Image (cartoon, rainbow, N blue to C red; front, side, top):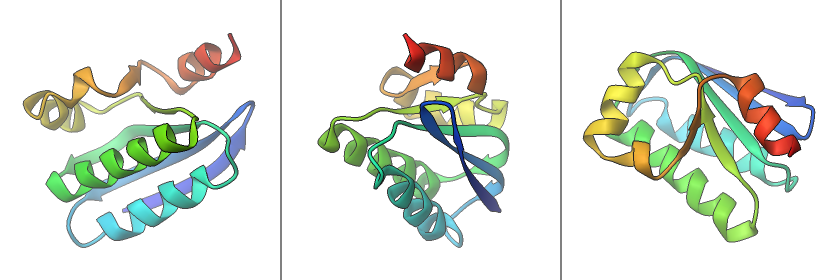
Length: 111
């Protein structure tokens, strides 16, 4: 699993890849919470996530709650089919703002 963080336009993009599981979810949590520290919206690119378990989902939920608490946005973009299935099972597809692409998420933030 890797996490690549980059400033892009009005947001910070956190691109996750590989398997997001119990072993690496603490690193994902730290990376997302660190990305939120500058107050910019965060877009989590999940296009290259091949697997995500409940601990990975919990990391996303914690980051989402932290973003709401500080009054900024956390959006998910390009969610892979494997990750989307888990989110749908947990009904989190109704909680997160999920956009089809990172560019679409950036366009929403620019409005």
